[in-house]
Amino acid sequence: MALRDLWGKLTGKAQPAPPPPPPEPALVEAPALAPPPPAPEPPQPEAPQPEPSPAEAAPVLAPEPPAAPEPEAPRGFFARLKAGLARSTAKLTDAIGSVFTKRKLDDAALEELEEMLIGADLGVSAAGRIVEGFRRTRFGREVTDEEVKAALAEEIAAILAPVAQPLVITREHAPHVVLVVGVNGTGKTTTIAKLAEQYRAQGLKVWMVAGDTFRAAAVEQLQVWGERTGAHVVVPAKPGADAAGLAFDGLRDARAAGVDVLLVDTAGRLHNKSALMEELRKVVRVLKRDDATIPHSTLLVLDATTGQNAVSQVRVFKEMVDVTGLVVTKLDGSAKGGVVVALAQEFGLPVHAVGVGEKAADLRPFEARDFARSLVGLDD
Image (cartoon, rainbow, N blue to C red; front, top):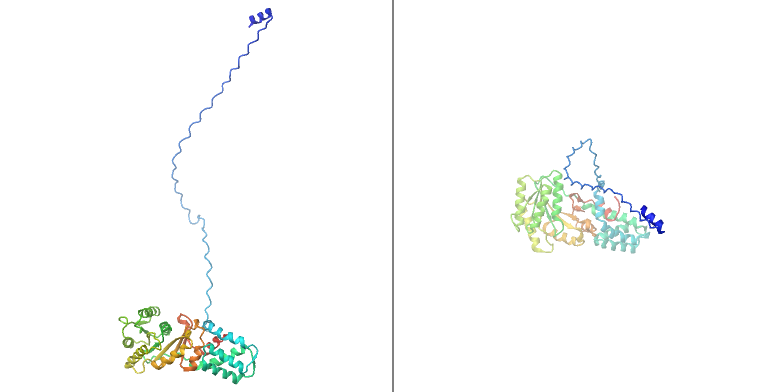
């Protein structure tokens, strides 16, 4: 470098200085390679934890059970009777309310009242008797619909009072034989079962005879009721067996067993079928061979929904088997409950009981005043 400088000075040409050598790059230390991640260890099962003691365990709150509905207060029979007669009541009282609102009880009003009573299935004879009673005691007076209802209840009760007689079971007969008859579908078998349950509750020994031998379903139905009530049921050996012979055998066995009440079911039959009615008379004849006083009671079961047709049923059955009393069922589904008044006026037969439901407690002895007031919608 000194020679070049000297030469430059001598020649006047300066030589460019060579570029300085590039700085040596600083050494950068390479980062160390990260070790590979360790292989995951297989999960180890957790050691079972000891169960906390009952004192340490947190209580589990169970959901509160829903509040039980309050039991419905039991209704008395009058309330059930009134509810059962609601349709019959509406038919009668709606008509009265539309006519008697502060009105003088003259001939025209009495004629309308009579038509209402006939339309409510009280019958022509009973309607005429009631209207005559109004004529004697209230003619020419101004009356309201409530006064008419109260007076009507009194007149109806007067007609019903003589026939409101309970069925009396006499133990000296041993057994007291009750023959139950009626057309198809009136509720004979159910009525027998209810009577059996009630008599057993009174401490009486009760048997039932499944005398509707033509229908296997009828025999089975009575057997079911026998299991429910605890009453023995005499059944036929085969379908279609002779009903009179079955009733006679049942009577003989019941007497030997010391039975108090023997309830004899019969086949439902139309009152206008003479051949079927003759079979019913045969049952009575065969029973009388053992004792001329048997049957001690013959109950005709009537369906209130049939209305005035019940009158013709009573007439025919009474001639055939000497009906001694009536049971009127299904008043809770009928708008024709007034037919009970027509039956009392027409025949004067005891009305032993009325039914307003399926339970044994819904068949009760007939009470004239209660029925009359329920029919016209008055409270007890």
